Length: 191
Image (cartoon, rainbow, N blue to C red; front, side, top):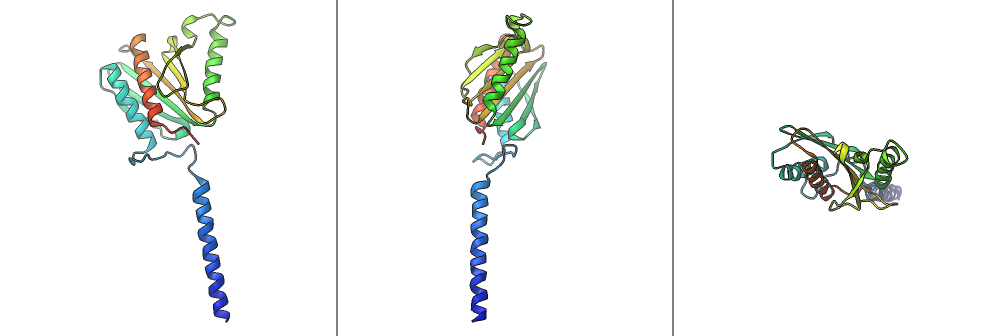
């Protein structure tokens, strides 16, 4: 009888451990800063950076190489380099994506708008980027800022800066839009 009790409590203990593990797996999820693999098995940073590189190179009409500066989903950064051009792609997945976008654009408007140092080239211009909810282009910085998040939801906050002699403003906008579109297509919406 004593052996039956031990065996029975061992089974109960084993089931409790299995149930606990199942809860941890089901509830734990992966953190926003942990790189995630896609169904294809390609890690998030590689998928985002390679997608952005291909799209930007096509828009530029010239090959680009990609280097992952930071692979974390919450602060992913890629550096795309070509002959006389550099494209920096940043993407932050998380619940503050819209807030990040709103803060950046509000500061630009306050500092360079009518109430501040009036510089129309620094003022954000609304543009359309497929995959985003809202996007702007800051001509003086050749900087695209966009998000696919709603005001109170998670998503991705994306920035694309284009520099170099091979990228006049019109081409820079086309390259930045292509890189941002590819980033939104490859990036998860965050936690």
